[in-house]
Image 1 (cartoon, rainbow, N blue to C red):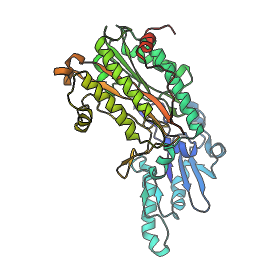
Image 2: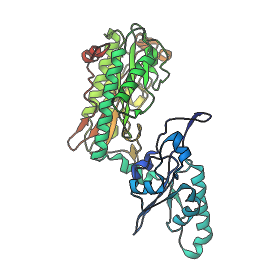
Image 3: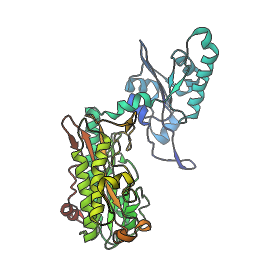
Image 4: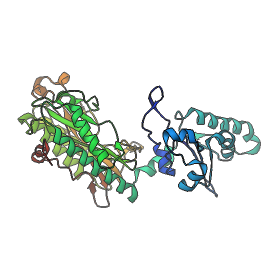
Length: 415
């Protein structure tokens, strides 16, 4: 398996963005240095060989200290560690014996060219020797299922990320008020993350007020909060490379209006149904269906749609108002890898799986007509993070309330 580091990204010219390490490389090796390449060799004598940047006093003056090959070998426990300049000469030899190479195509052109050379060499020499790689396989074949089940170290990191995410939500709620800029709420959330020791936000913090609450990934955060608006805040902290992800919806005035309240109550009930459905042996689809049934029944009760709940779900009558799935895996990535279905069947939940439960109803103005028109511009999403346990689930974000009275009390509060 050949795992290159994530590329250094620039916002413009030579201005570097904050470096984001490759998650697969980190998961298997702990390596976070840019330009590194790890080579993992299986078989009877497994080996971990690592290529890293050499020490460079001039470069370190600008960007900080480097481990260098000797330091990296000690820190990461590699069997051998070389300067990255030696990769060209050594990788072909390292890849000469295995029958296949696990490498993610399209991620690193320079390393990919070396992998291609190894395949060409095997094609030329393999028929005579009966050895050498004949296939390139996506590393996810091995890594994705490993990452799907979190161990205790990972669960502890995610719990911490969730704790800090709760702090950020509370800080953001305190700033919510009519006339406040959305970016002020964003700044409060992100500032609380950093103040608590997080690396920062795991993804672009979403603060959508009014009709922006109906835009699923609204990150402009560029408008002024209206007097009677709802304010949807979707944010998560990154701690020790792991992520939290919480959404709460707040009333700008401190009190939900009657229609806002009616929509909120439906979404909260759907959240509770999804949590209740989360247990080992159930499926990830069952969590979605439990939440979706409550949402569809709520739309019927609001006279937005007509018909039987089962028929409406089959018809997809709820999709204009609830267009996304209820859950995604959570871990090193906010949308962590892992199949949601296998062989056409929904994935069975097992202890150690971590995912979000985030039902929502969105009455987009451009789609709100007829019986849905009175709810135009109201978007409500409520999201918690859960870990499957031996007997059910642990709500990792349960310290942040969801009830209407508690949400209202958080808005503009001093503590």
